[in-house]
Amino acid sequence: MSVQRRPLDHPRDTIMRTMDRIYHYRMTTTSGGNLSILDDSGDVWITPARVDKGSLTRRDIVCVNADGEIDGLHPPSSEYPFHRAIYQARPDLRAVVHAHPVALVAFSACGQTPDTRLFHQARNVCGEVALAKYALPGSVELGESIAECFAAGQSSVVLENHGVVVGGETLAEAYQQFEALEFAAKTLIKANQLGPVQYLNDEQLSGAQHQAIELPTFTPGPATAHERELRQQLSEFVHRGCRQRLLISTEGSYSARIDDDAFVITPTSQDRESLSIEDMVLVDGGATEAGKRPSRIAHAHRAIYRQHPDVGAIAFAHPVNATAFSVTGAPLDARTIPESYVFLREVQTLPFGEQHRTDGRLATQISLAKPAAILQNDGVVVVGKTVLDAFDRLEVLETTAEAIINTKPIGAVTPMSDAVIAELREAFGL
Image (tube, rainbow, N blue to C red; front, side, top):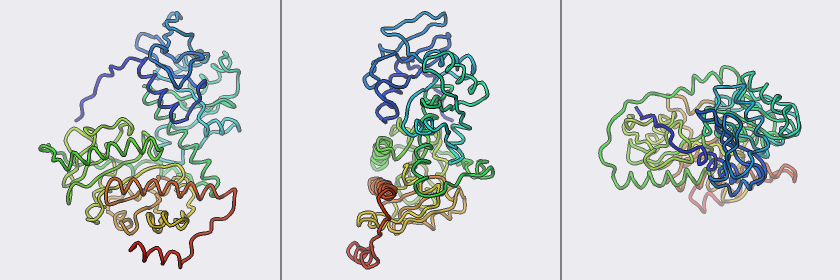
């Protein structure tokens, strides 16, 4: 069993790093948004007012003591009153994220909230989303409106004509909730350009098909140079996938084959962006490295490797545009440009929960000849000969999906003809 570590980062550093992440993913503006942490002494650490969010330093973070005294170089955020109101309404929460990400702002501007029944993980992480009626930013009325939603049990609240605020037991949890909610909102906006959105019903949301399969454990010997190289590659491409917004912190798994029945894979329940080579999990012969928890669908990765000896890497991911196809049932036709067809071939849509089945059926539906598939209400899966090859296919899949969606205001997609496809297949040995 893994050791539970005591958090030792100072609130200043945790807030600074989280705001840097939010800003560089363009989920807030230079002047917008604020973060806070309530510590064990009752002090609230919060971002300052009127300081560039793109260049915060740890010295800029302000402490509002439990008695109301302010300690810092700047005044606290003007939204401090609603942070305090949330903590008073919900003693279980110790961190708050407020920002203005574009998709959630779109929902706030029309007085709506995203339906998190779109994905199992979004529902699990975000729950029901509340709508707080508009009130003047920084006002007591706004604090009361938001606190009322939190007191009713919600932890994700869209602010009418304003933005969003979420709360968590830690700032990491609040950030993941915030990111998952913006991802769901973006997906919905894209999906509505493709057709009617399909939501998950209560049975599908029950989570039975998402239960992790407990694997026996073993203590591995020294890592070979080959294993070390694959761990390094996985770590680098997972980080790159987060930067490219092909992965988000709470979703997706990536693996690389070591030999016939051994592979390394990303762990479950860990922030994808912070994974190191040590965090990657070795799975060998159906057993997992002791002290670590592999992805909940490690069994699906193993089934694909065993069925297809030529597959060297597998990625399950949730890029926004391709995932929009997964929640509508709209077909993703890769016959747009030569690169798309050569890399993706005919892209299938597989039923919801297919990767959680234990009968290995997914492995019969994906291969290097059919290297990409849409998973209903659950993102996509791609395979490749190498970690780079799988990542390349994932990028091509997402850019193809985005290009198709972007044609909607322009005109109908004209796919390449059968003659062109035949020529491509012959030229590239497909």
